[in-house]
Amino acid sequence: ISIGNDKILCLWNIEKGEIVQYMDSEHSEPIRGVDWSCQGDIVTASNDCSWIIRAFDNNKNNISYCGNKIENAHSDFIYSICITSNNKYVVTGSTDYKVRFWKIDNQELIGYGEAHDLTVEQVEELAECE
Image (tube, rainbow, N blue to C red; front, side, top):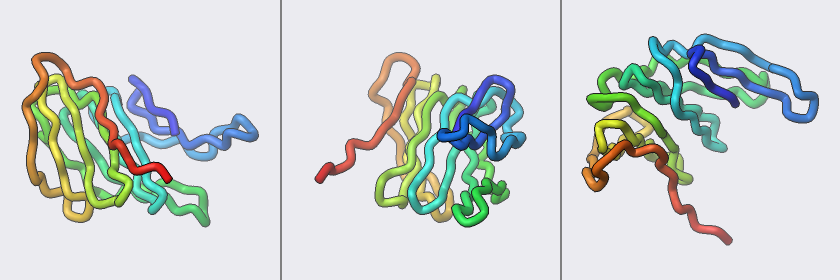
């Protein structure tokens, strides 16, 4: 998956170096972050202070817009987003210096942290490795 300032989301076939799907992201500003889960969820985050969850159909090799755009998720640009490995939560980081935690199933905000004095540029989960 690739994202960009053009607000476009592209799904790629890496082996062939070809675009499989090219779609408008539904964001009104450039996309800053993207993540996906093995369960088929794809999330994007944008300068428009929103994040969006989409579904990936592995059988059709297709991404669909689920209509789940979380507006005003932060008070400023969202630079980073990740889905936890258990596929239960989304974490977002922003230029408002906050990290926010969301339930993936209903997109409910469950908490946030204020530990940074500047932009939160990357959020990742430290998953257990076997």
